[in-house]
Amino acid sequence: MSCSGAHGESVFTIPTSGNAPRNTTHEQHVLTRLKRRHIVSSKRLNGKVAIVTGAARGVGRGIVLRLAQEGAKVVAADLSSCEETINEVRRAVSDCEVSAAEVNVVDSESVNALVDSVARKHGALDIIVNNAAVVQTMMLVADTPDSEFDRIYNVNFRGVFNGSRAAARVMREQKSGSIINIGSWYAKQGFANFAVYCATKAAVMRMTEALALEMAPFGVRANTVCPGNTETEMLKKAMREEAVLRGISFEAQVQHVKDSIPLGRLGRPEDIAAAIVYLSSEEGAYITGEALNVNGGVIFS
Image 1 (cartoon, rainbow, N blue to C red):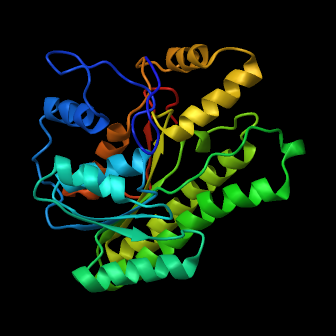
Image 2: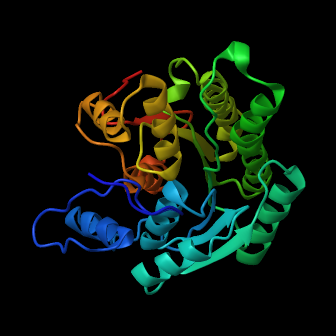
């Protein structure tokens, strides 16, 4: 295992099996794995209109790619440029309809404008994935300044709330839709030095449960996906900090995390994306208010 580039590429190079070339790009690794699972051209979301926030890199980019492969019309939204995401998706999916939009999830007016413009352009909004998030700097509650609390809270909870609220207004009128909020296994239990992050992800999960009850009479579903440790730049940053705190090498910290996962590997963006496709499709039509674990067996509740 070794580290690779930033901006949404896999942080940890995972060797491929079979005849796959060793020097492929991240998206080629993703496509190889998807083809192996026979799901590239299933088109379960054909014609559906989707927004994905936090789409410039990492899990968000993987979600955009998978939704496009399933036939959805996807708007990749982020405060940063989504140009790399759009280019990667267009290389991988020849017949996709994908576009980029700038959004500041902390600003409700920015989020409302994005959702309203997408719904007007396409005549509907079928799926929103509120994925944008930041990880906190490791620190004790006693040492956490207001500025750090506000930074994590504003993006991780307020941002998800803003996206959920804007989508709920549109979906309530059209009487259909799927709202998917990205939580974390950190929502399910507390972790020292990550109190604010844990709290915001737990808040997302509980808010989504309430939203599911509110929106069910309108035919709208709301669910949370709770990833475990997933190959992203955000995880790389957190593990570097923890390695320093524990006085071990980064490589040793990566192995320590992998050893704690019953399935024996880190999650991948496409693992999260697969859960989102399921919850967004007709196959998940009877599921709402769920907090779906995608963590390799680390936690079950």
